[in-house]
Length: 374
Ligand code: AQP
Image (tube, rainbow, N blue to C red):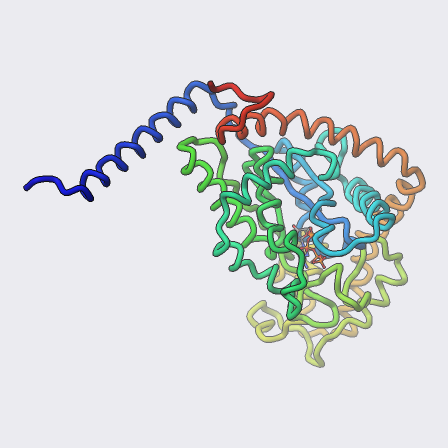
């Protein structure tokens, strides 16, 4: 049978697509890709208030350990902070405080790269490219936006909505392979992997790695001390809901004493914590702080009531957290030193990110300083 005009159009379109694909492949081989890093960590934390026990046990403590085995890049994510209103003076202060907390917790600004996000422009550049890769449908599924925007969704900023594409850019501007986070960030990390894969497919390149989440420890999701069903969070209106890394010994003990519990004694096995959210949370916190596990804690405390358990937990929390609070206050006495450490970190971060973003620009087809392909 003779070819119809529609069939001819389809064949021409297929040939055009094939030619485009070949062109892109040729471009990609002309530009030899930067070698893929084997083990590189990126993680970030917002300067939006006091860091708390959830941030420490879910993320920061693991960051400290991972410094030994990975090339580690840690970032105070001030660009993310302005997705909700911030007072400029307060933002500057919070950025220094978070950096001081990280150093006090054991992040070494020499061994790791520690900086604030807005000092490295490649994060924003890549975020725009990813805004043009990610689909509305993918972002519409993000539960953090729904939680944070709440009922006043129409009034939420576009930045809050596109937060996950900036987070993908934070990680992939360094082609990081591993991302240590708390349980709550798992969905954003899955989106990062989707964006990396979609970029690679769109441009027929194996450029971005699909970063692995690293969610580990006995307290990957620390809950509020006032409600065992909601996450311990910086933005909770009640300061009694969280233990801040800056809280002194007396305040830590007082918050634990006041923590919501139930009237029953602790069980001897973890199955007995089912349906007891507050008890489960406090035992999980104890296990994480003691570098132990829930079963071992219950083996010691099973059959004993909160009247005995809470003072033991308070003593342990004070022993672990109070020295970090003291160290942080010492560091904050010299804000110029913190600024200098962050500025040095930003230079080192940009050294890694700049060639990666040059190559992204080249792959995408932007003409400019970094362009290699003709
Ligand atoms: N409750 C938590 N338990 C375990 N891990 C947690 N993280 C946060 N809360 C908990 C982990 O801390 C890292 C940095 O978090 P972030 O400050 O950048 O963002 P966030 O998750 O939005 O923190 P908050 O406290 O909940 O802030 P607000 O109240 O502003 O929303 C991340 O790795 C996170 O998983």
